[in-house]
Amino acid sequence: MTREERELALSRQLTGMVERMCALLHAERATLFLYDEERHELWSRVLSSDGAAHEIRLSANEGLAGHVMVTGESLRIDDAASDPRFAARFDRETGFVTRSMLCEPLVDSTGRRIGVVQVLNKRGGGAFSEWDGELLDAMRAEAAIALENARLLYDLDAAREAELALADKLKAQHLELQSAFRRLEEANAEAQAALRRERLLRWGAAAAGTLLFATIAWVSLRGSSPARSASAWGAPAGAERVVAIVPRPVEATVALSGRLEPLRMEALTAPFSGAVRRFPARYGERVEAGELLLELDPQRIDVERRDAEAAEIRAAQKVRELETWQGSAEVAEAERALAKARLALDAARRAAAESKRLFEKGIVGRGEHEAAVAAETTAELDFRSAEASLAGVVGRGGEESLRLARMAHANARVHLREVEERRRRAELRAPFAGVLLLPGSRGGGAGAERLAEGATVEGGEALLILADLSSFALAASADEMDVAKLAPGQPARVSSEAFPGPGVTGRVHSVAAQASGGEEGAAGFEVVVEITSAPPELAERFRLGMPAAAEVVTYAAPAALLVPVGAVRREADGYSVEVEGAGGRQRRPVEVGVTTLDAVEIRAGLAAGERVVVPAGR
Image (cartoon, rainbow, N blue to C red):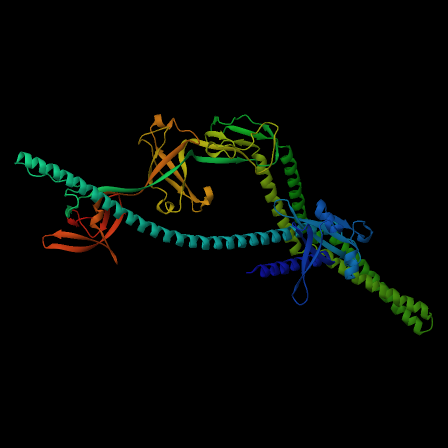
């Protein structure tokens, strides 16, 4: 759904709400104004008879609607034109005459004013009652919920579009990285070949020197045979070799560097706005689970709780009133008024009939007879008005009104429970044993301003960080090439100048799915390595923010089949080696794995004990 389609659907929904308000409140007109923060204006979009949306705008402090928007005050006015705040220009422009008015602010779930609802002119020329104001108060809650849901839907669609755009960008970057990785692999292969050629030259020079000295020794001793320089694979350097495959261990690692931080940290936030009454805990000290850390003065939240409780009681009373509405005093009064009007109409009809009879006989004059007929007409109009009034009073207690009252009561109960829960958390206690840190001081850096007794805090503000120092982790950053090799659970070796040696082990705890900005715009992915085992004498040296490094084992094979790098040939469709057997030599396709400085892992195509040929010069 496009933005225009969403806005049109919202306009239709708001138009339906406005029509229901007019029907339930017996009003001539109603308008929902929304607040535009950027332009500081109130605006409303109305639908014409052809289905098109038309927009009207006014300043956010203009007229009675602007007064309600700025102050948050609800208004019930019997004569709007006599109010100095009334903006008469809209009546002059539209020809509509505003008499009575109900005007209330629209408030979202956070208490922020997002618009104004305005109901004009009670039908029949009367004024809006206190009950009308309470009914509008319940209906505006439904309108505010609809507006907030629409806003959340807009935000969700915008986030989804941004996510799709980011996914496309990451896909393009991934393709570029794959291409760069392939180019890097080819450059690495060329470097390995150059290294092998350099190594062969060094071996050849060493072999020539050895042969020269051996020849001199042979000449001088006349009995010795020249010695040969053996390679690491048991064959003369520079010559063709035949190597037997023996399983050996091999592993691939990724090196990371970062700082130590607690594996488990929790931010403790202020449940409501207020002043700090007590702050017995201290930064950097250890606290036990359940220990009192901070207490807020509950004076402000107690006022809010009493207001919420009063609102819940009023809402409950309104529900009970509507549930027994048919037997209420207002309905009974309207029924009595209708009965009186019926009796008066019957008497007027009899008087008019008698007057007609006497007029026809010439006993009474025409003027007296016409007065009797007029009295009958007046009595009939009074009867019809009493009927409409009774229908209106009965309708105020209908199913829709009762449903709105129950919704308002349910909202009041939810709000009261939420306020009571925040009041219950006036005392902040430690959820687990740990050490207190300043907010924002993860890893030992500078944090926010320190708390003190008497300081004022805002609801939702981060006050303390509780760190569990029983378990540490290394927080590091991996580049786009290494992050693809990392996964949670991989083993790691952690080291630092503060605790040298191989005694600290760990495993990858988490790998971020999204990159964070690094130096000079380089992308970095956060990697957390959990320290799983450390001797007590080393663990005592751990400090927050201490630099450390980790070597993550991304691949390990205890019995891998390794062949010299020179034995592997790159073919058009893969890799191959030359195998020497009883039937001679044959070219055999193989599947390669990791590559070390001088060997390649063979994962398929060879078996232990087989012999491969390393050509001369490789």
